[in-house]
Image 1: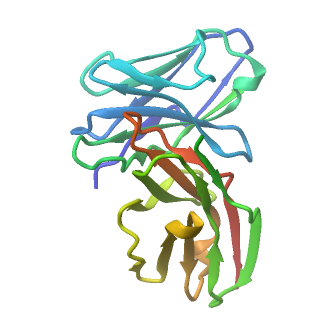
Image 2: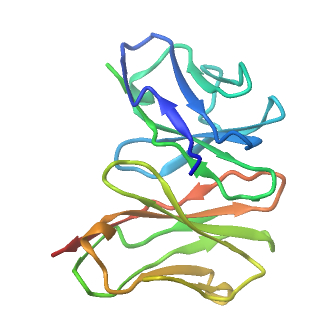
Length: 114
Length: 115
């Protein structure tokens, strides 16, 4: 069964460093998302992406964040200058154009900022 | 504004007991979508069900069943004859039909099933 994959599974970085989290969505999916989950808290929407542009972003997704689909398979989330409060699990999700609203999630990348 | 409330923070049951996880939502839209996701200890989010606002028919899938009631804005999830493998955090989520499809999650209910 096709699945969303994410790398790395765990990333440790120092405050102020740039990180790139990578996702490979399901191959025929057209809509892509990033969510985050601070430890023990609920899952929060960050950004949605369709047709090579951002569809919507939350207030969390400030100028330090950016997303890109550099080729036909990868979908990346970049944090330019990490802060301690960026420590969280980051989930990538994707959905097809026909299965409206049914988003499939990747296993997540745990980001630890020290 | 859209909001999802899962009042039960944690529930503990013994195997084979039935358990119901509550979900109450708020939305101004007449068309919306409700979801349940399971997050096992390994951390991934597993899609369980999607329900459209115009379809109030309850659904059963094996030991799982969902009760959608628009009159009370609730979308409750029942596990019948619970098993240890059901231990996880369960999230209810809402998406409105307003040209955006972001999921708004509740705070989750941690279910522990003891043998």
